[in-house]
Length: 167
Image 1 (cartoon, one colour):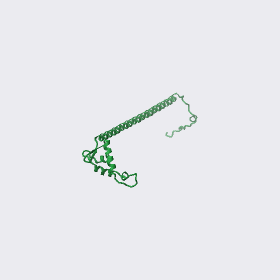
Image 2 (tube, helix red, strand yellow):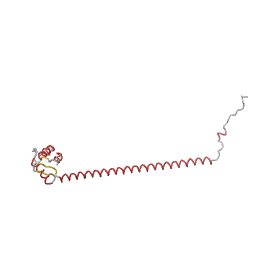
Image 3 (cartoon, rainbow, N blue to C red):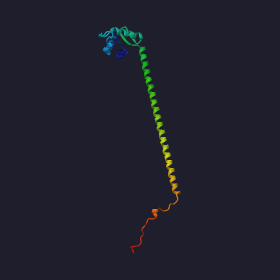
Image 4 (cartoon, rainbow, N blue to C red):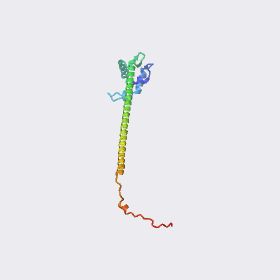
């Protein structure tokens, strides 16, 4: 199948010899080796032709009398449908991931707004407390009795001018 698809002979059918050569180029020595015996048997043309006939029976390949083959229309339709399904699945995943991202961003923004509201509320409460304490201080100062002079102030000696030298 890989050899037929990679030849890209969609409008003109591929020659079976060209398919054989291309398949031989694709396969590595590990695929060609016969594992029942340890010696290297090379390319097995019978297995290639049996595989081609089995693909014809499954309806994946159409064989024609001039020793040409092409991918069947049913196989092309199935392949197109599977590719279309993969594409729609990928689009749905992308939409879902985009939706999840938008939800996550919205949650983060809501959380940030809540944090900002909490901070503003704390600031307002602190301002109110500061205003209350400052107003209490002002009231205390107004209602406090007038104090007399302190002991230090009583004993404080202030020199007075006794003589005036200007006259």
